[in-house]
Image (cartoon, rainbow, N blue to C red; front, side, top):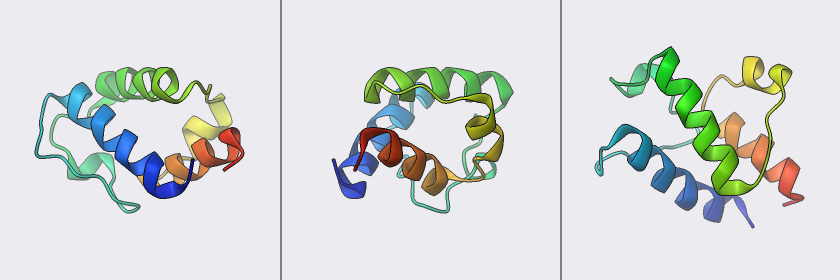
Length: 81
């Protein structure tokens, strides 16, 4: 799965978690860019992403993620993309 395919799936997950079909995430997207993205939704988002991709984030990865691009990089690394 390449980065483009990862972002297609990430967009689906973000739209589902935040119940907003207008969301389109990019490498630079952060919690500041999505109004409903608070600490509780962050947990729901991470769980949904883990389930969608069949990956598990460790605490170090969760803390280090500064934007969606870094999340995509971690997913790609775990999938061997």
